[in-house]
Length: 367
Image (cartoon, rainbow, N blue to C red; front, top):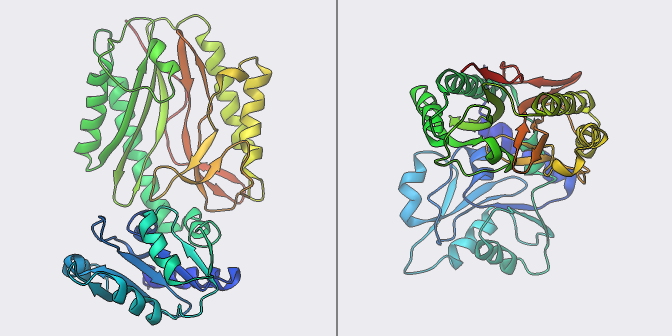
């Protein structure tokens, strides 16, 4: 029989706290709270936090949100209303979780600064840090249930990408193609998060704002899409070529594919993230296109679409089994075209498992 995931995550977090000699963790409404307890209260200017101590946890909860939040958790609430302010409830919550005399507190880096200052002011002289070595370290390693949901989302993204392959034609606009992708996601119960469609020279902008540009014969099109169903989401980039490819396209596509394969080969438990970035970057640099690879090789993915580990040239994060991240090198030639190939992987003992089932070869449209 499966255990309670909230209880298991709190236990794992407390083990990390003991290992790191942390006395208190303060978490604001957002992704960290969602990962730990499955929800977060309505986020606004009213201080609302979850405190995790060595043995107990408690919420500082605006009374306005208490009734709705109680539907999601049985964790103790210390409530406050607008007339009285949060100070007494904050003191009671910190006392409840054993924070009196705390020497080390971890503050959620995504928390509002005024919330964080309330906690730090209430614990004068307490050393503070962010969640990287505790909550962040746990979030980077996905369990079986998380893997299954990520895999399901990847399959929905594959289907949406294939809908784009089927629908694309000269004369339609980028936004028309993007809408077809969104419709397929929505049909399958997923909420579209982004849909980058960069035709021709627009593909040389890695984060192109999809617009009214008309797709023409001879265009290479970058299609980068993602949607969310459940807690997790998808992210995939593939290429479409309409008619004959632009000059040099096949050569550059092959170089980017070789960079993907080099990063896949380098990604192993115990390897630093920077080594994976270097593996991809070296392939592109040696081919003479180093100045046109203008971003990192990848980012982690989970509750948030971008989260640790980040696959950058400076990251000292040591990769481990269960980590989920993108591998997405690219080459962007101004005024001509861009090529990015992206897969989300989960790291296994023998290397990365790709979540998508869609080949990275370009989809050619005959016109």
